[in-house]
Image (cartoon, rainbow, N blue to C red; front, top):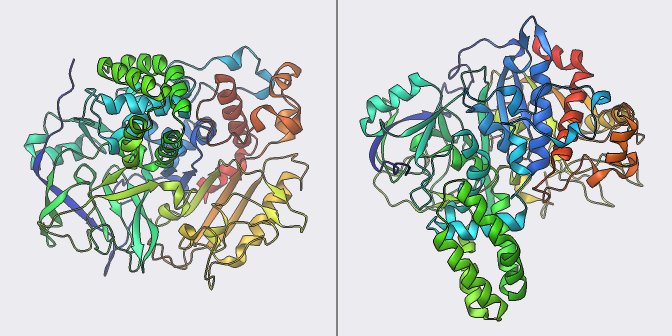
Length: 606
């Protein structure tokens, strides 16, 4: 059955200013439900590795009880996700009641000693992990993207459509008609907020609406980023997508968008993002916008993980100069791509015919036809009509501004959630591919996302860590505005993570509870002088977990110092994982929490 087309026209939307006299951003102004400890959980990016690790982490937080029938997860006040963390977070937040949280997160927690090679090969029906075990390699995704383009999906919606077909459609969260009028839905918090939207916009009554699960859910911040220009330099500004609004809550100094406008100042009701403002009333905080379709959860999960769109773009460009590779890739993956898309309701007749034609042209070395084939991939990066709440450009043409992966700015998810002044404690899960090591000079090496939070540039071999302040040509300039904690506290974090792991023996998981005070950050709208407690959890192999596994499961993993796929540091480019890899990673990350229950629970009691 065909999915209704998106609704176009003029709409009324609330504006949420977040800066200015008397403006303070809090979670409680949106969700006024008391939560113990005012805790935010931050799930880092990292593709399928981060998604699988996050499965175990959320599962364990649901398993650990704060009191009778009150889980830690039910008391989480905010969930901040990036990229691969958003692959888990978006469907989890909007999960329909037909799927249990337990199945979605991989089933009940099992002690490592109870795992068997056979049990590791299966995932429960409804588990998010099942959707990355097939048809999900980068080459398969590329051919699927081409097929969708041939079926009429615009280039700048290919990545969003792809990731939504894989991770949202199985849960009924992605109405898809198989052509260019996708997506055709909006999202908001609950029936009350939906009623308010529809009351102001009756034409949206038939639109499919994704509402937050009826099970206990935290306030959700899905993080992406938008390209801005500062003094001729291309940087990224943080964009938050929540169930209430989407926008840039800060005013990054001198940062302008594709229209030359200073960005920031807040957001607009999420359905009305990607629009053109036609009227604005500061007194009522309402805007009228013109819109071709509504901003959907397919957009937020796609934009949050846009680095993969860039990777597919690069793969396509590489094939332009080598037609034989293109012919081989299409030949190998065309049947599976067509089969996958047919399962999701796409009529692939046109796509299959054109893919066959392209493969033949590539095999015959027709460079011009290959170049034409890959030309649309240049537009694969998501781009949207952004306009600043700070100063809405009423009735002015709005050029689209390119978006980037949330992890291209802050892969930790920490800086964005600190914009909410009632968040007092953070559980930060750094689900990285970077092992915790010490170099020959005694410098402790950690994931690139952590040093910038303290004002340091990522680690450089032979140099170590250097402050951003005063640097004329900094390493990773996109991170230069990420500092939210004092620089003097960074070495303390390094020393304690290294010590907790056993100083190179990897006997125990790297955990450290650190009391910090925020520093002012205009890029993320973080106020200075706020005390916060952070429980850092760093993804690293651990002997004490490995030693609990049976000999049979250890044989599956391989020797501790040379485990399967460099477990647990699967490459971000290993987008397709086996059920065994997913189960092992999720079990390990859950075990880390289960063995330190009191430490995690303490943040909810403070």
